[in-house]
Length: 246
Image (cartoon, rainbow, N blue to C red; front, top):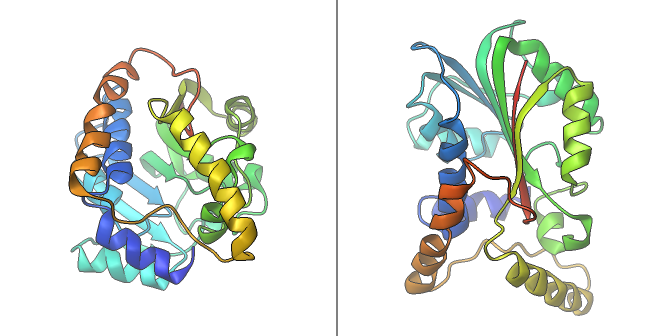
């Protein structure tokens, strides 16, 4: 991820609609499982730490990220159990965690081999433990936003399910999400491709402040989908969320 994107993320994660809605989806899917009272939880690619704060309410949470800047931002949030490292070689014992989360990480350029990374995650999860996984969908949505976030590719649901099963996971729940405004996002990305062409490769993400009333409207608009995703799998959307078990 570009350095400026870490700064923008830290400033906006608490209230920007996309981050807020994503956390609500995560919470909704987590309500499907029961963790032990003293659960050990690992957030791989913890970024600036907003999701790690959420996970800390469920047990002892550990954060791992390859970026020193990300770790510093996590420390500013008062988070502990932080370590610099990557999913390619996790610095943890076998069968150690009750839950591992991987939020929009597998698609990153720093992970050359998806299957090797998933098997490394499987190694550190306890038997019967869980992996909660999100990532971005549909290669045709590729834009300069993905370049700014150092994304190597976008996925289909079937591709990710196959990858997880091949790594030894049992998939419990798999759904697209961000379905509610999917058509709006498709139009936005198609327009962005045109703008990107004239910007001559300038990196530009979609994470930018918007008017508060519009921000709140987006959050409100997603409430039905957030409620339904616990019971239904969305037919399409710009992202994927998958719950798997070892």
